[in-house]
Amino acid sequence: MEIIPILSMVVSVISVFIAGLIYINSKKSVENTNAALNNAKEALKQSQDKYLYELRLNALKSTKNVEATWQNALNSVYHEKERIKDFDSDSGSTIKEMFNDHESGLLKPSFENISNFSKNLEKKFDEITEEEAKLVIRNMETMNINLKQTQEESIKRFELLYNKLKEIQP
Image (cartoon, rainbow, N blue to C red; front, side, top):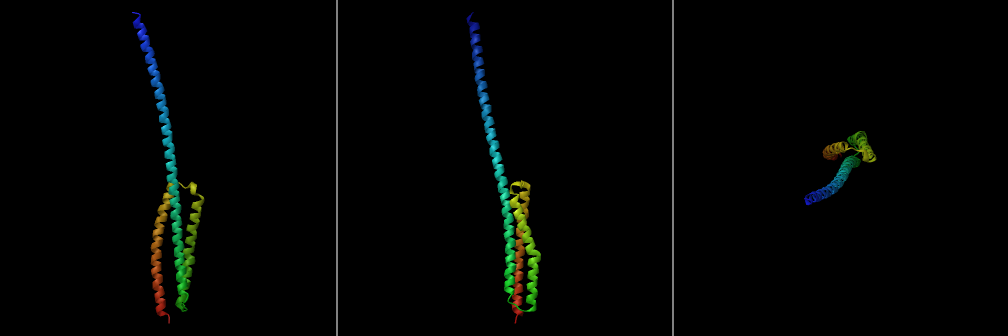
């Protein structure tokens, strides 16, 4: 009968030992899970930071693209002014004034505004939120499309005007 109490003590000791091993294993598992969770959080933060950086960069690129389109429009007007410079008629000088008014009254101030906006965007690059960057990209894409359409129409009109001046020039 003395064996039964000893066996029950041995079983109890083994049970405590097994419970201790399970506890240690569980603790390690929790530590590994926490480490994996921290790694995942860090990777997510880096991914979000990279996404926001790319979004800000795209906003700046779209602004620079619109700025280049405005510059191109100014160059087109300058080119047309140079072509019409050779006409000495009254209509030629009237058209030159029209080009000057168009350039100084509409194009240059708008170009300066977009240039200032672009510079401001560069200065505050790290402060731009995701929503602001998306709004800038949308607005600049729309503006760029409208500018290109307007520029194409203007070039066609300038060409027609130039051809008419050539016809009436003696």
